Length: 293
Figure 1 (cartoon, rainbow, N blue to C red):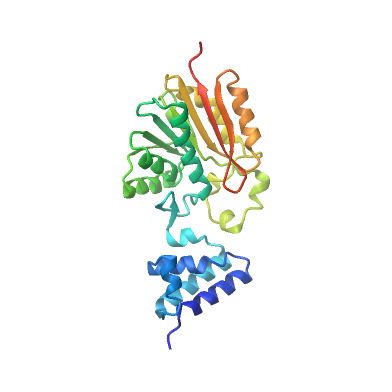
Figure 2: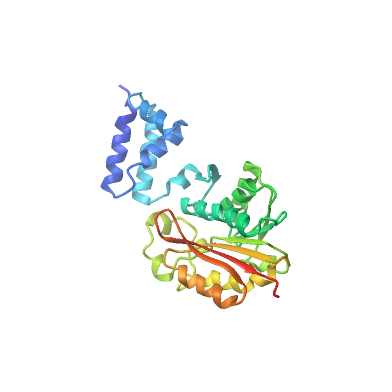
């Protein structure tokens, strides 16, 4: 007699819960395996499940439970801003919080640079390309350049851009180095910002799988911010306004804001530490006046 969907899902939820994993992982895996929405899965809980699908689900749940393999790497994709992005162990898994950074960049561009024609935008540390590709698709008149130190990450980002139909220029290199003396109007970055102390306390699904190159930000987590902020004047477009938007760790708001204040004491038109949906500091947004007098 064939198993029913709810039976194998109950097995999955029990095992996941017993090992302090997310009990919903089984449902998400089976949705992807069967190509169903959650509503379709739930309404069909008493339908039989093919033995090959049940076996696959058990193997996948056990891999997540005992090895910590992230769901997104098992599926090879992750959702971001309503689209599906290819991911593998060469790139960070896009987070929901980062969607807020993408949204805020658009809002700040409308508010502080409404007359900016075809702005040149750079995404520093692009990883999967989620930020750059999304900005390119949400703002078709923007000219997007994306940089990453990892060639393997750039391969993933290029594939995502091709699959989703975004026109992005990809550059290998360290932070702003490949862009020096090229003109940009907007900079966006979700750089590595995990501190040395925090690295050891990361969940195993992150620590053992996601690339450390994209996580570790030095002893205090601020190394990349220091380098980017120091080099920003070298990519100012020559137009009057430059917008920079950063994702930050939950305790880094004041520290990154202070780096900006010290670097540009007389040029700040607007500077804000923005909270995410959970109430944690998550973005630093700044508008700089690049022409004096």
